[in-house]
Structures are given as structure tokens and as C-alpha cells.
Image (cartoon, rainbow, N blue to C red; front, top):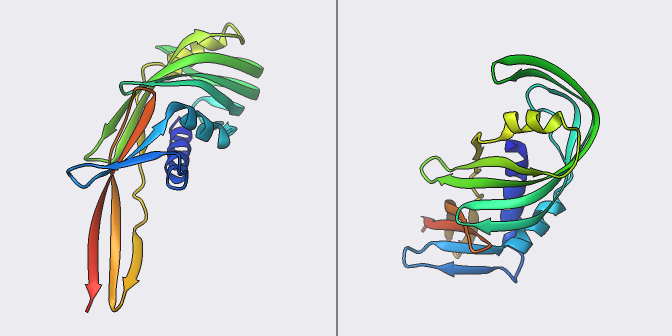
Length: 203
């Protein structure tokens, strides 16, 4: 989950800097806010899929997230549909207090999910708490297993610092540092706040 979110967030931000149809504003605190519509978010996500998530604790075999669609963004929450496929899947571990070993073979499952979103400004960490809310298909033993492992657990995603912009004017070097000050969703839009700071060196 952390791997998926990290790749998706990095892709969203990189794309947002080069897509002219996206909007950006500057507020009274001299912060830049990039606004990305939900439909564009969904397009960005599917550009980086499929993503292998084999290294989930307790699972063996290969699992891919194949597609994500029907993305809707509310007040710091998201809902979406996801399709996952896997080969030779086996789970060994605990469900609650019970130890279990389940061989699932090949899987092709789809479900509707929702996730809460929380950004810790001090630590620059994005927290996601996903939950499976509707099962569309798949092994009947798989859904309780996935729900027990995934639901209502908060996954931290550390947001890497953005590379500074460095330019030269005459004999002076100007460095613009950019920190992500906020990440939130509302009204089917993703908002990314950026706080730029300027440093000068030279004569």
C-alpha cells in the first residue's frame, strides 16, 4: 500500500507541473496551491499501473493492481473501484488471534473501496486508511482475509522533498526551495499546497 501511494503521489505531482489545464493559485501566505480534478487523478493513476505489490507481509506469489477507476474525492476521503490479479497466491500469518495458512492459487478480483486521507504537515507524511466496502467477484475466502489485513489500518506515506530550482542572474545564484505544505481533497479535487522560499548567494 505504501509503495502504491508513493508512486501515485509522485506521478501526480510531476504531471501536475507540466499539464496546462490544471489550475494553480497563490494565496495571501505566498503559498501555491495546485488543483487537480478527480478525473485527471484517475488518469494519472492508471498511467503508472499495473503495480506489483508482491511484498505484502504474509503473502507469497505475485499480485498486481491492474486498474483503478470511478475515482471520487470528498472531504479528505476518496472512493474508487480497483482490479487486482495474482498468480500462485498463498497467505501465511494471523487473522485476529488465529494462525492460518491459505492457498488461493491465481486470483482476479474487483472491489469498491474507500479511503480516508490525512496529511501531517510537521512530518510531511500522508496517511491513508483504506477500506473494502463492496466485493464484486473472487474467491469467497479471499475477501475476509483481505478485509482483516487491509481495512481500518492507517498507512504512512512519506512525501519526499521537492528538488530546488537553481538559476543564475548576473553574478548571483538564486535557489528556490519548495516544500509541500498541505495535501487534501474536497469537491472531486485534489489540492497540493506548496510553500516556496528564496535563497540568494554571490555578489
